[in-house]
Length: 154
Image (cartoon, rainbow, N blue to C red; front, top):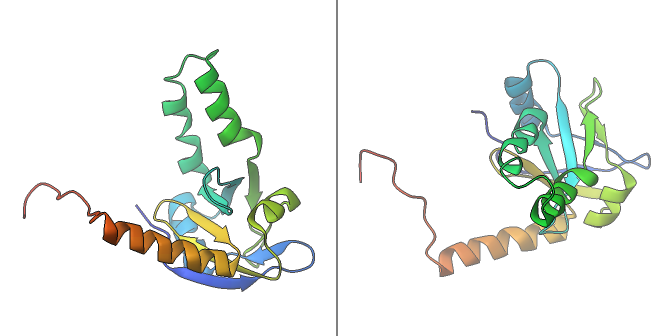
């Protein structure tokens, strides 16, 4: 699977358009062929926008279906995932339009940071992105978080 890697900064124009970084566009093409379809949604844990490739986002339906359709847990999670989700496609220059509600949620103005998180990426206000990366590194270090060993070498 192709992953979104690195941190990239771009400018948000007055019409709410921003260019998806070239490495992220390449990753999307590897996943989706020619189309660069994304689902944008506000993070429910951070002041940023989450950007999900369509097929990765749609895979969330499976685990959600394990909840009772009429349960409060299902309704809460479905609302958190879907109610504020926006499908977007990049234009031929690789730009996407960020909906105003998401721009406001993330506190974006002129500069935006794209932060790769493997299967998805996030769009942040630059200073908030720097704080988030520093806090994540510090928590991982303080908790001695590591990845489990995959079968084979130890």
